[in-house]
Length: 411
Image (cartoon, rainbow, N blue to C red; front, side, top):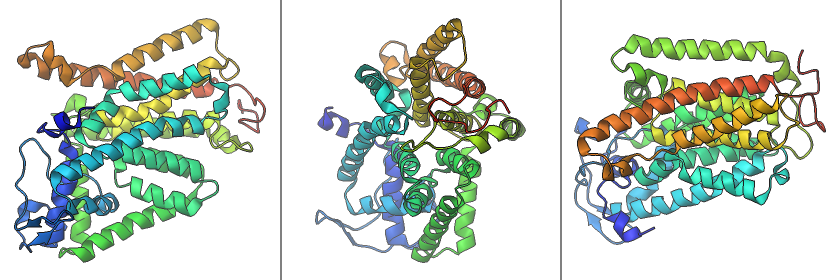
């Protein structure tokens, strides 16, 4: 990576800028409201490198300047506001690269028996995660997606032995509610009420701290976040509602229908949910992987998401690779296994398709069409993937070495 070349790009770190700019504003204006509401400024401000800031930074073209996450992450990332923007941008880029490198390790560690995968298969999971469009874009624009996904995986890893830590980590992750809601629902199905309660307390404490630091009332601060959530769901993205951007009623209807279908699905498999159990040394059973896959893919479809959030599909991809390598998991024919392998190749291709780099191939006038084609294709492919995950769950075989299902899975 040519860091000097990246540093000069005007839109590099675009989404990270929103947190840095807002933190500089909030630290000096003592307000939780967006920077365009005109509250008094308090300057000068001394940065870590000795620079004295006499006024708010100018809004740079092409960079976002309003926060898109809730209080806990905003508070954590406010530490970057004590650095000048170029240094803050590069530090966050390095942290995102570290998250990118560690996430595949965490995913493999979460598999029921990771040692049954060969080194080559593990490298395939690494390689696929690195080439996903979501991973590439999240690193480029400086999104918090990688950090939140990392927190979600750590939460799953420590939830059995360190519930307090798991609750705190999930509470921070919920700052990007659209992504972490899948883990919240998964833990709800697993009746991890202590972890869930702690996570909500973290969110509440974050809002209280932001309110105390600022001048806006508590309820007004909550109102800002609610307005932010509503606003997000009117934006284009890869969620189902983006197919009907001109119809707000369709947006609500699609989210409701998808949620009802998900609820009906979990009601149908309720006996399996009750019978799924952990084996000694196993963090997540293979049945749990199916539930995680369904919930993550569902969240991508019903809540506002841009392409950078699609990197969580690595859970679905790892599940397919792991299941296809061991015939004992699914009671399907060889022809079906071949079809699953072909779908896996197709799915990875769609989720890794080039985006802005295609401007070197297509004329500028065609690029908006290309972006829309890619977005629509990703959305429809995600619909197929969530259906496939649900179906594969129904094809799980009875217990193998106690890895899942104490009771009859067909009950």
